[in-house]
Amino acid sequence: MIVDTRTVGRDVGRIIQAISLMMLVSIVVAALNSEFFAIPAFGVSTVIMAGLGTGLVRRYRGADPPEKREAMVTAATAWALIGVLGGLPFLLIAWTIQVDPFPVWTNTPPMDATTAIFLNPLDAVFESMSGFTGTGLTVAAVEEELPRSLHWWRSFIEWVGGVGVIVLTVAILRRGGSSGSYTLYESEARSEKIHPSIVTTVREIWKIFVGLTLASILLFLLVGMPLWDAINHAMTGIATGGFSVHAASIGHYDSPLIEYATVPVMVAGSIAFPVHYLIFKGEVQNLYADLQTRWVFIWFTVGSLALTGILYANGQYATLEETFRIGLFQFVSATSNAGFGTATIGGGTEQVWSAGATLLACVGMLTGAAAGSTVSGLKLIRVITLIKGTAWQIRNVFRPQTAVRYLQIGERRLSEGQAQREFTEATVVFLLWITFLAIGVAVLLSVLSPAHPLEYVIFDVMSAQSNVGLDSGITGPDMPAIAKGMLIINMWVGRLEIIPVAVLLGSIFQRLDLYR
Image 1 (cartoon, one colour):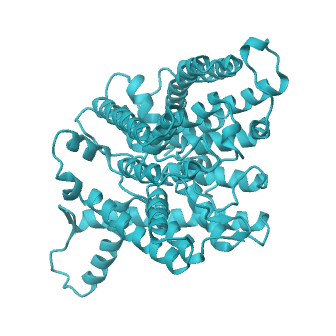
Image 2 (tube, one colour; image 1 turned 90 degrees about the horizontal axis):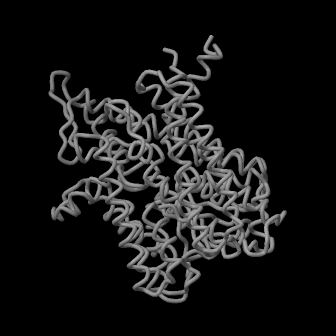
Image 3 (cartoon, rainbow, N blue to C red; image 1 turned 135 degrees about the vertical axis):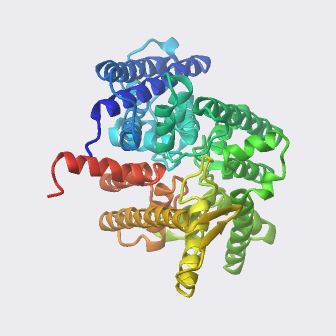
């Protein structure tokens, strides 16, 4: 069936309208930091995005509410466009500093090597897509050199992207009736509902998210992080995004206390919003009673200890405490998809971590944490479904045809039909995930120096597609343009959990009549 492009156009326009409001907020932040030179860049970006969004909404005003196929295409299209348009502030601020057309009182700084990177539109789009998808891979060589307005924009787009641009749109631009809103909400890889009303659910999610962010800021301040750093790291930490205001990320502070304090922030971002809601209501038992939350803690514990063991056996660090701290921090950072760093994993062509340690971190990035959180990756519930579903399929071979079959996942007892559907969905996502990962690895291997270890190439592609942000020294401003383009696609695909992208491609092929 042909996708209704009018519906897609209208809903994409509404999403772009919502995101344009982020530019207005950023104007205020630039003014508060006396970076008046950045205000025109945010203003022009606002006009472009608001104009495009409003034009699409008006043109397709009478379109029907979205069915599932339109919602999927809307999600894939909107995330691609937002990733591109979100690069405008990077590009325009870099151009402003380069040209320096304003009076002295606007405080235009001299051009530095890091900001100059964003004169290249591809680098601006890379940073934007990395931010909105909550990835945290960066082409900014030395983050300290960036103006605060760009620090803010990087953190802000990760913070909003962690919850989702469609979730933002539903919260502030709701339309009559909730069916269309819920269909769009589901298309962004979400299905959890805290309240029967999807609009009320979305607003509850935002309340929880803001509360967790404020708590994270307070925690960082208590352990000695400066205010500006605390605000930015709280936003990107609770969103499991990982952008930092320092090139060395959390390792910049050389503070075990700050490193340990960052771990609970990353863990909080890994827990589903409905579970946070129940915990805030006093139902603390959900920390262990909920299947996914229980496995978040189990997987983080087992993986951290395993990584610590590998690093200790390799004699990687001076003391057992330092090895444990790095193993804990880096595994939680990888598996929560937060992407903060305290240690060098690789130097591009220079090997630092062994293949075993690197690939264990890759497994963490692949699984991710709880569905319904800000985390990407496959999600633990899918991993559990794949493992238990495979065992269930094997056991069924030895059962008589007349036997009643069911699959127990946590407290849910699935009938044979339900089990087959969920197992098939998890299998399809896993196979498509690995396919896109393999494509990304193949492209990078074809354009990078053969001196890069294979496990490091896999690591950076996995980091992009799982929206993590850790790197092995490969990702950066000097990376070939084809490699940057491929990682942009991996980030986009990973944030949408594959299926909306597949539906978009299928609808394009259908319109072009390529199935014959």
